[in-house]
Length: 436
Image 1: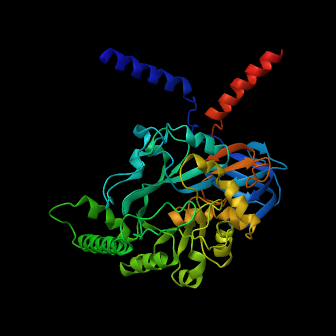
Image 2: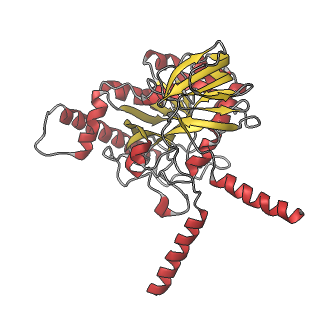
Image 3: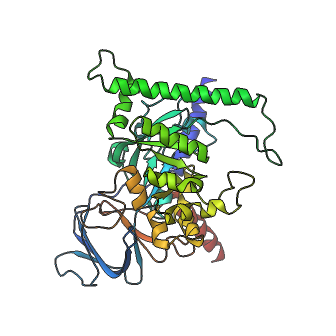
């Protein structure tokens, strides 16, 4: 039996080695580079035609609109007729925390228990995952791997998607604490309604109120702990909450309905925190309230069903546009991890439903950077920021013209190969050879 298990493990290991895409992270930028002649999409709504980007040591030195080519000893890249965009940012994703959904051993995005504030997603982030390389080919160069499950799930961090290990990948460690607002399950009825609950509505509502009371108690005790100075006994869960109360770490609260969004915002205010609301399906119903409280929203992908059976069937498509046009800071996200490759095309969909294209671009670049507290160093193509951007042959928000030809992360010219491209070449070679 032992020999059989050893042979099985060896076979699985050999198979994984055979399937591993051999892609090494790019070395540090060694020479100053100038990219000329392109249309530069800054990320803040500004577009520069026939622009020039000069960058060195991983930082942007200048962004010029006069089309002049630097005469210094620099490497010149001619990008005439092409487009340059800031690296797209995937928000609230379990990218790097799960590899194969059907294989439990590769799932590392959720812990047991309701209050897991001490959990840090960054230490579980897998830089050897094959998925990030596929995302880079569509312009997604940064992400926020986010823990899930329970009421308080733990802290996310922001990473760049070309690294040897999680220490190299981290752009900002522990940028946000994530929690889910307790809700009472709703019976939708009708086809696909999921049947009736076995528990009475009254008991479900009571459980929700109990969960909210426990959440209030947890935060009250954690806040009191944070004001104690140096405690004699360390409570790791409360210790992790100190950064939230000090403002060094943001609080992301998942809430869908208008009632729950209002409750979540007021909950944060009670403890001196301005939360970021994720999900936000019914945020369009309380725009004035959200503006008064300066709330940032991380809305779900537009390719989804309405939240309620009597909602406008097109509301998911219009949601981001309605909120952004009202003056709110809106970030666009997609659930899961491998789906993140479609992030730019979701932003493109939003433009078809009422949002200016450059503002749609901001929902996956500068707005996301602001929500994560990294906008001083990335999120837009501006002097002094990280040289993290890519060159596309066409409009990067349109799947027909998105063709990422070259990408830089902190000035490093990254490898855009991936396992999908390798398989495509392999079988293209096979069928080409058969025709000869």
